[in-house]
Structure formats: C-alpha cells, structure tokens
Amino acid sequence: MASKKEFRVENEYDYNRSGPIRWILSHVLRYPWLPILVTAASIINNFAASYVQVFIGRAFDLISTPGWATTALLGVAFSVFGAVAAQSALGIARNYANEYIAQLIERNSRDELYISLLGKSQTFHGRQRIGDIMARATNDVRSLNIMFSPGVMLLV
Image (cartoon, rainbow, N blue to C red; front, top):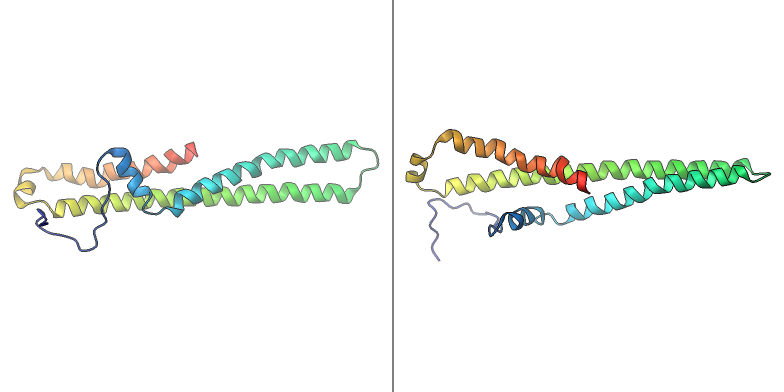
C-alpha cells in the first residue's frame, strides 16, 4: 500500500491513535519495564514505611518487659534503620523511573509530531500559522511530561 506522506522516516514507531487513552498507553507500553518498576517500587516502599511503625512497636514492647536485653533493642533499631533505608532507596527509584517515563513520553510524542509534520504537504504548511505549530511542539508536549511527573507519581 502506498503511503500518502510526502516524506517517510525509516524507523518510525507506530502508536495507537484510535483514542487519547490508547495513545497514552501505547507510549507508556513502549517501555513495559518502567511502569512495572514504578509500581513494584511504590508497593515495596509503602510496605517499608509501614514496617517502621511495626518495628517501633516491637521496640516499645521490648522495653516494656522486665529485664530486656540491650542487644535485642539494638537489633530492633537496625531493623528500623533497614526499613527506612529501603523506603528511601525505593522512593528514589520510583521517582527516577517515573521521571524517566515522563521524559521518554515527552521526547517520543515530540518526535511523533515532527514526523507527522514531515509527512504533510507543502500546501498544508503554507496554510498553518507557525506559532501554533511551535506551541504544540513545546507547551503541549511539555504538558504530557507534567501529566506523568508529578501527576501519575502522586497517584501511585
């Protein structure tokens, strides 16, 4: 089948344009390991945050009993430190992966816009206002980045 485009890019990625949600999902699922990483890091991060409270409760129970050992309290203190360290590391990993997804979606959607504009005829470009096209290439694409970071990050 012959293409109606004036110019064609050799390695163009085909995104699902049948609806806005499918279009966003096709951008996100181009890198399937990143949403999995964000979700897993978020779940483990929340478990680590909740275990801090559990370990503090165990420490309180320990010091409430008569004749408690200092080494046992030290073990509980190291457990609290481990949970906080895990929470911190996984929070950073989650935020980094989410920001990386946002940057990739911004870059890929901008490339998709440029490839789409490259395929338009000279008549199309002659009828368009350049400022509108430039606004789409900068502000609208940047809004996709903001939708993911911090938008999705606040939900996960």
